[in-house]
Length: 113
Length: 110
Image (cartoon, rainbow over all chains, first blue to last red; front, side, top):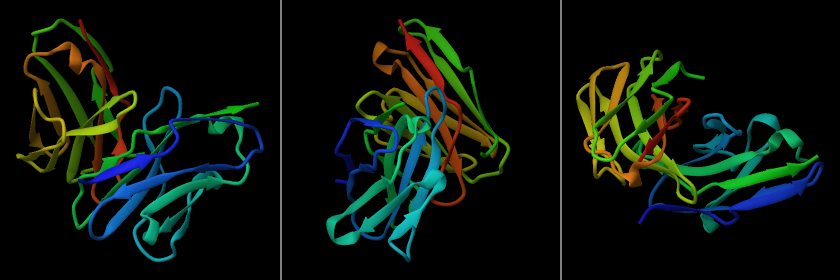
């Protein structure tokens, strides 16, 4: 079955700490991978995406993610978080020419000032 | 962001009543989606549309129906609302693999 697993449901960090959020997927065939972010009270916004090519992708606000095909993973990283990064982060996957996207359960990040 | 609006933004309704949520887009995107967001479940796809009058079921479609008579509008109907349908509903649109989300509708079924 197609699925996305996010390892951490809640993460609390202090400002300037490094961030890594885990994401593993189960999806046969060619995949497209995404991280979306939802700031408090707002709708989801695309943070970054991977379709093909360089497995290290850079997104907005200093975020990056690395696609490791052998591990079926697409982990999100940021070297130094800020208070404004407090949000919920969702990993998502689609592929095989289709547009139905599977979302993970989300990780709530709280950054202490 | 794509021009996506949802109405109403908040609704409280009683069990057993029908409810219709509206999603309107101004981007002329081909694909439109309805998701529900619940704590611990992330976003789950209810129904999606790949063109006018072309719709298909998602993973949690029971108790929901949709219609798309125009490119810009995608309606979600709860035929007889139940308390388990209390949730936040998001509409999304897209022309490629990425999606753009609306502001959401918070629905409470009492």
